[in-house]
Image (cartoon, rainbow, N blue to C red):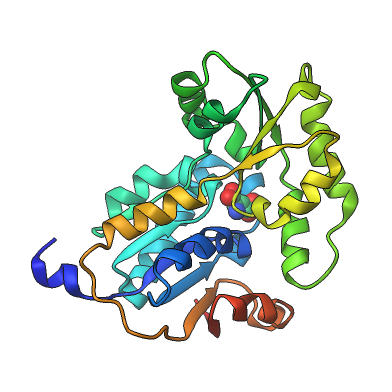
Length: 270
Ligand code: DGL
């Protein structure tokens, strides 16, 4: 990066299928409150958790290419574990700006657990990725990692951000998916390995019998974004952020209150 480029306050672009990436944006805004934000939601492709590796490895770089061309961000954050664990390398190979990914927080969870039994909740696609196997053998080889693909929990989080009460059966099924496996009752730490899941953390805790320490990658990602954008002169006040979707703009009004909290007041279609 040249000195000039480093000083340009191009927007930060966040990418997810829906509103899950707001859990990453929330932490980022604590560190960089006035950074201009483009938030892209691939509603037309949701849920990623039920799609194949081949489909996602083609779709995600294509979409990000179009988004980068349109919004000229200084950096892209893939605020989606499914997309990151499958397509991070290919996206990095086609974009010539920094790309930050979101991957399951197995390392910190391994340091936090007292019982040695960790739960990992992700989408079905995420939990089967070799990327997750590698993190598990590198950082949690001496721990028991119990995985569950709770793809439906994405819908509970989406509903909550539309102002609805999330379906408790979806929450209970996710918790049971972990606790009903062997040694599941010993889980004391749960990795929220889908960016939608921190949005329903309170509901998840209520469904567990014991107190759980939840961990997700959002704080680490926010620190990484702040580090990569060090030296950038941000505007003095925050601008109106853009929420851009591949889906139907007419379906967005129920989300507006939630989006307003993040300053995402301009809605656009890709
Ligand atoms: N928020 C995405 C993730 O972190 C998944 C959502 C979906 O399945 O579409 O994995």
